[in-house]
Length: 240
Image 1 (cartoon, one colour):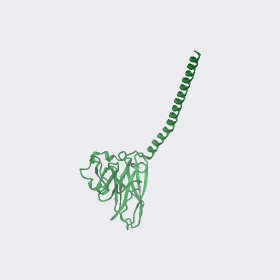
Image 2 (cartoon, rainbow, N blue to C red):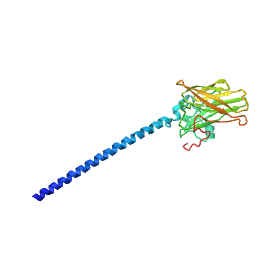
Image 3 (cartoon, rainbow, N blue to C red):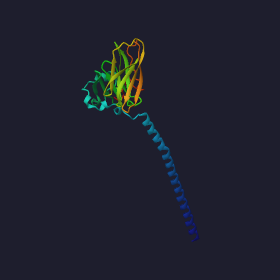
Image 4 (tube, helix red, strand yellow):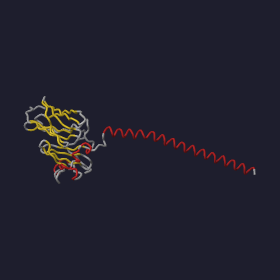
């Protein structure tokens, strides 16, 4: 009888010890889970904050309402020549657009990878990525010389309500229509390189200033895209 009691006592001690060990393990696992959640949550918030600050999730649709304006939908095949010269095909006919600004024809479309591609008749064009235009850089301009003066043209974000140009003490109003702007100044400017200043007037009342160089007459055409660091004159659109 005493042996049986002793065996039962040892069994009870073993069971109690096992239960205590299991409870300790569960508490440790809970603590690790809490620590992991505390560490991961700030990282997720920091990452989300970084995305919001740099605007990498903002597509071109967000800043360019012309892509949502069916009134300027391009007829079938209208952008084929442009897409061929840029090396970036249109995603589909739904995004293709054609309209006038300052008596210049503008054609534009979106690629499958989300780039916005555009071209002005008789001038130049290009593509930029879905990083999009911002309030800090609301214009994507190009400036070059013509026979009797110079011209400036490009793409403007939706926030831009008007564009003016200042050069050598004279201010000009730039034509702006559906995210495109254009101005040609037929006035002698001399053979030397010079700089013009574009002023983008925004919907919130702010004004953004951009200085654009124009090449000297020995280099008659100079295309630049200072507004977007990854704006391209020719794009290999691998997703298209």
